[in-house]
Image 1 (cartoon, rainbow over the protein chains, first blue to last red):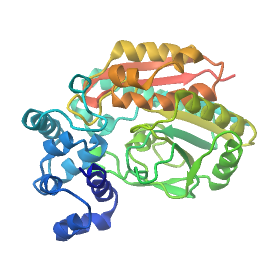
Image 2: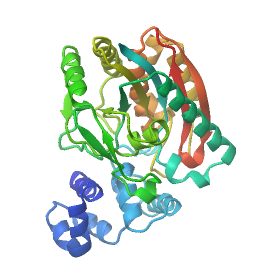
Image 3: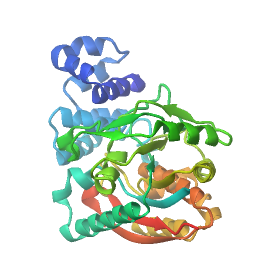
Image 4: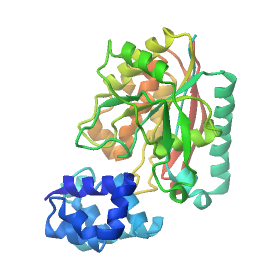
Amino acid sequence: MSLYYTQKLLYQLNRDPAVRRRFDEDFESLLAEHELTDEERDALRKPDIGLLYVMGVNGQILMHYAALRGYEWNAYLEAMRAGERRYGPVRTGLYTRADSR
Amino acid sequence: MALVFAGVCSHAPGITGRAERADPAARDRFYAAMGRMREAIEASRPDALVVIAAEHFANFFMNNMPAICVGMGEHYEGPIEDEKWLGIGHHRVPGNQPLSRELIQEIMNDIDLAYAEEWKFDHGIMVPLHFLTPRYDLPVIPVNINCQGPPLIPLKRAYEFGRSLRRACDARPERIAVIGTGGISHWPATPDSGRINEPWDRAFLEKLLHHRRDELLAYRDQDVWREGGQGGFEIRTFIAIAGATEGCTGELWCYVPIPAFAVGCTVAVMRLH
C-alpha cells in the first residue's frame, strides 16, 4: 500500500495548476512519478472513486478529485457507498468504521 | 487595545456551494445570524481579524504537517477550490504582516508555532469571510490547527494557544477580532455526510458558552470520533476561542442542523470582559 503517495498526488493535483495541466496532457507520466501500486494507478485512472475511498484516501482530498472527474456531489457520495458495497469496509486510515475494526 | 470581538461559526463548503439544497427557512436563519455576526464585528471596529480555522489539505500535507501554523503574509488568496464548486469567487485578502510577526513572536513564549508567508485559503476560511468581510477589505491573520487526522494536539494545547493569543493581543495597540471556525459533529466528505449529532453538539456548546473549562478539555479523541465524527476533531478551533476568552460566557445566536450543509450551522459570540 502506498496510500500516502496516492493522497500526495491528489493533494498536488487539487492545489497546483501546473500539476493539473500535466493531468490533462500526460496523466501517465504524472502517475509514473509516484510510488503507486497497480491497484492505486488503476483506481486513479478510471477513476474508481469508491475504491479510492475504501483504500483510505481522505475525503477532503478525494472530493475535489471526484469533482474534477465530473462527479456531482450526490454522485460522489453514492460512489463511496458503492465502493464499500463492492470492496468491503475502508481498509485503513480515519474512516475505518468502529464496527469493522 | 487588545481583543475587541470573539466568536465561533461554521464553515462547511455546502453553506455556499450547495445553498439551493438546504431547507430555505433553516438556511436563511443561519445566513441571518452570520449577517448579525458581521454587524457585530464591524461595530467592534477591528484593525484585523484572526481566523482560527482547520484547513483541509490546501496548504499543509502529511509531509510536513504543523500542529499550529499562523499566517505572516502581506496578503493571501482564495478560494483554492473551484469557484463554482464552492460558490465563492476568487479574491485577494489583505494580511497584516507586522502584526502577525508581533503576535507570533509573543505567542512563541508559550507555544511553538509554524508560520507561513504564503497561504491559499480554502473553504474553512473563505466561507466565514464571504459572510463576515464580504468586501474582503479587513486584514486577516489566518491560524490553522491541524484537525484533519492524528496525531492531533491535545485539547489543552488548543486552549493554551487561545490563552496565549489573548495575551499577545492584549499587549498590542491594534483592535483585534478573533473567530474560531469549525464543525461540531460532522462526517464531511464521507458516505455519512449529512449526519449530525444534535444532542452532542448542544452539550458541547453548553460547555463552551458557560466556560466549563474542565469539561471542555475532558473530551477524548476516540469518543469525539465515535459521537461527533472525524469532523468533530475541529472542536479544537472552538476550544482555542474558549482559551482566548477565559472566564467569559457566550451567547448562542444560531444552531440549526442542515444536513445538506453536512453540519449543525452555528453562530455564537463571547461576552468579552
